[in-house]
Length: 118
View 1: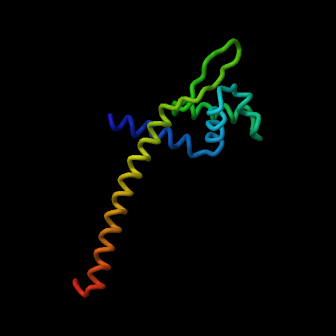
View 2: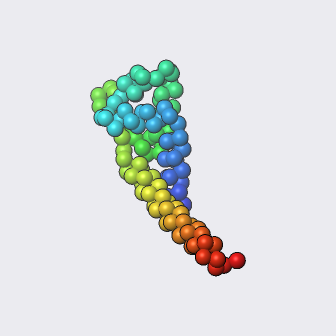
């Protein structure tokens, strides 16, 4: 099961690594949009935007539905929440490590100031 989570996280972080895809997700956070609507602010071909959408869809960060002849895209926050949880957990672990390091360094400084220790 851990391997599956790691693979999903890898897909999410890989998808988020590109600024265009992050901009697309930011736009979708305001509401669903078609590929044409998502392509408007970018100086790139429809084909290039479509490739970005496929990466986001593969990472399961967006979903596409069929509505008449259009295929609106919608933000799917489940994977973003999982990535945010992973980051929060690792931030907590590292914060605890830094706190312990700060305590250790303070103790060493205290020993040096009182002449104890080496």
